[in-house]
Image (tube, rainbow, N blue to C red; front, side, top):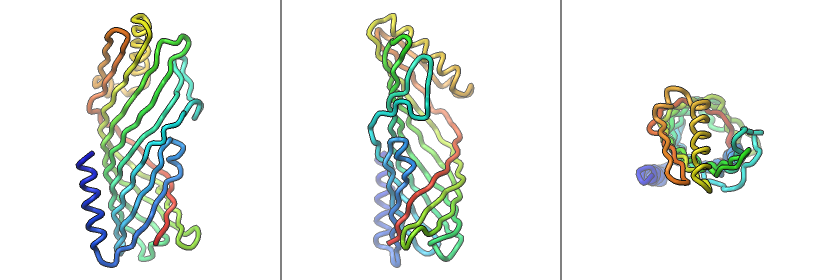
Length: 229
């Protein structure tokens, strides 16, 4: 993360001292639904831009969103933080509307909490850390005066994920039951190629699982609200 912050600082410094620089503020409203406040800045010159987006975790309860139900546990909390750095090229001379394409680098941390049920045998806290490279296509159009909608309709990225699951129970017997729940969930929900990278442990009333260096694909789309100064 220190390297990412250094890169951001260098990009911002370069943009501040550049001539004819256009500043743009960005906000992604759809990320609020995933308990993340995502804001960003864009430093634009001619048809090219450098974009820095930062997602700040919003720690609030997530229970019953998406109607996620499981016979063994309930989905209780979700939050994430992200740093994304992108290079964008606009195809039109008028940057208030038109198509663009961009490539980006992204680091993200996802945190979630699960509570077991039927019967209760403990709680699970899960953490996933990802590093991603991606590209996307989008279209930008005017909503009102300097306010624009930035619709990125297709993006694809690939990343490397590392993760941890930490379980806590009241008794050793409950911990064994929780261990089996995690094992069954991994076997039923994680792709076969990634299962070999997941290792689970049990010690006393604690259960732990680790996911090591697993490569995965992802598809991205969404919308941002843009203000051009």
